[in-house]
Amino acid sequence: MTDNVIKLNKDDVLRLEIRTSDDIPTGEYLEFDLEDIELPLRYQELIEKDKKNKEHLKNELTIIEKRQDVKGKKLLSKNEEDKIKALNDFYNKEIEVYNMFLGENGVQKLLCGRKIKWTTFEEIDRIIEEQILPHINISMDKITDKIKNKYGKSVVNDEVLKWNILNM
Image (cartoon, rainbow, N blue to C red):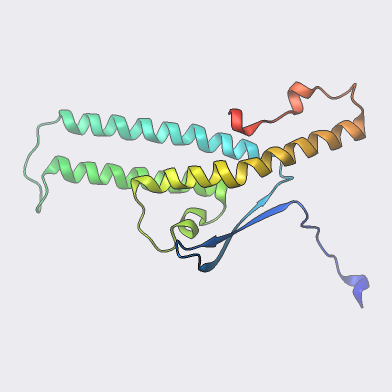
């Protein structure tokens, strides 16, 4: 009996399959609800927190560079050890920030078991810009049109409703 079943509409969900560099499916996906009006805000927050994280790392590395270097506990010097720790802290903060936008374990899904490196975030930024943001922009235009149609053009201010993510 289908009267007791609710089927959810997933028309505006962007589902991106993740494949290895050899074009083999990993079985993992990134999903974005394109009608989620907070999605552009999460992207904007990603950009802001990413800038803060990079600035913090730059400051940490500057402090370490200015410090007198001494022998470390093992093979590396104290300053080299501290640089590695600062970089690891940066990576962990960046993973948290990117996962806020990409979804739970989004960065890990995109890594496909690889270790994180400096260029990882450049790759993810390229993926976001080329494969996700265009869909978000189209969706925001659709939402704007739906609001205009429902409430009338005189009520809606285009400046307020128009969200062009690429210009953030």
